Amino acid sequence: MTTLATLALLLSLGQPAQPEAQPHGATVAHAETGHAAGHDESLGAVMMHHVSDGYLLEFPGFCDGALAWNCELDLRAAFGTKVDPVSGAISGPLVFGSLDMTPTKHLVMIWLASAILLAVVLGAVRRRSLVPRGLYNFVEVLVNFVRAEMAVKNIGERDADRFVPYLVTAFFFILFVNLLGLVPFAASATANLSVTMALALFTFVITQWVAIRSMGLGGYFAHLTGGLPKSLWPLWFIMVPVEFMGLFTKPFALTVRLFANMVAGHFVILALLGLVFALGTPLVALGSVPMALGIFMLELFVAFVQAYIFTMLSSLFIGAGLVHHGDHDGHGDGGHDTSHASHVAGTAPGHG
Figure 1 (cartoon, rainbow, N blue to C red):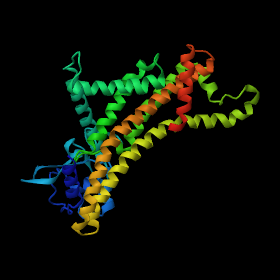
Figure 2 (cartoon, rainbow, N blue to C red):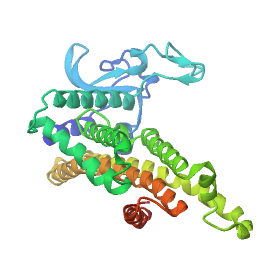
Figure 3 (tube, rainbow, N blue to C red):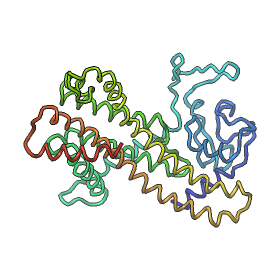
Figure 4 (cartoon, helix red, strand yellow):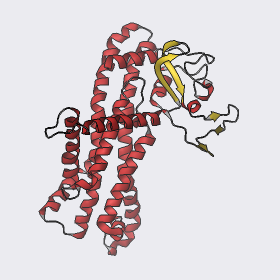
C-alpha cells in the first residue's frame, strides 16, 4: 500500500498541466472547478490542491477513450449545479438561494468512510461467538478499550455507559476518516476545519448538557463566577467573561489539534515527494522517497493516535462536568467520587 501511495503521489505531483479543451473525465469546463488552463503548477499550489476541499474528484480509470491516472469527476456537474462564468451565480437542484448544498470532495470521503465503517461493524457482528475471533475480536477489543480506558477511567463507572455510544462512534468515525485519507487518490476529511469543528461541537454540546444536568441551571451559571463569594461580586465582571471564554477553549483545542495533525502529515509527504520535481533531478528520489514512506507509516500510527486523543479528551471534558457536581454539592457516592474527582482534576488541565 505504501508503494502504491508513493507512486500515486509522484504521478500527481509530476503531472503536467492539461489543456482546457481536453480534460480527463470532467463533464464541465475546468473554469468552473478552478482548473482552467494556465493554473498554478507550483509545488505549493499542488500541495494545497491535494489537501484543500473542492468539487473535483481525481481517480485512476478509463476516461477520454484511454486509461489514465488523472481522470476527473466534477461533483457540481454530477449533481446538476451550474455556475455562471460571468456573474458567478450558482443554480441547481441543490442550491437554495445563496446556500450551495452540492457535496464536496471531503463530504464524499465522509460518506465513503461511513459506509466502510458500517460494513465493517455489521460484518463483524454477524459472526459473533462465545470466543471472539477475527474481525469481531478486533472490533470488540477497540470498543472495550474505549469503554474501560477512556469512559470508565475519566467519567466513572456509574455514568460511563451513558456516554460510551458517543465515544465509540467518535473514535471509529475519526479513525476510518483518517485512514481513508491515506488511500491513494482519496482525501482526508479531518484535514478540513469545518469537519473537525463539527466533531468538536458535538463534544461541546454534550459537555454543557452534562454540566447543566449535574449542577442545575443556577449552579451552572454560579460556576461562571469562578467560585468567588458574593462579597466579592465586583470581581464577577472579570471572572464571568474569562470563564465564559474558557468554555470554548476545549472545543477549540479539539478542532485545531485534529486538523493540524492531519494536515501536517500530508504536507510533509507531499513536500518530500515534490523535491524530485522542484530540484529537477531523479537522484533526489533516492532520499526523498524512503523518507516519504517513513512519514507515511508514521501517518498510519497518527491516524489511530488522533482518534484516541479526540475521544480521550472528550471523555475528560464530560467527566469534568460530572466532577463539578460533586465539588459543588460537597457530597457524592463515598470515596469513589472523591478519588475520581482528583483524578480528572489532576489530568484535565494538562490536556488543554
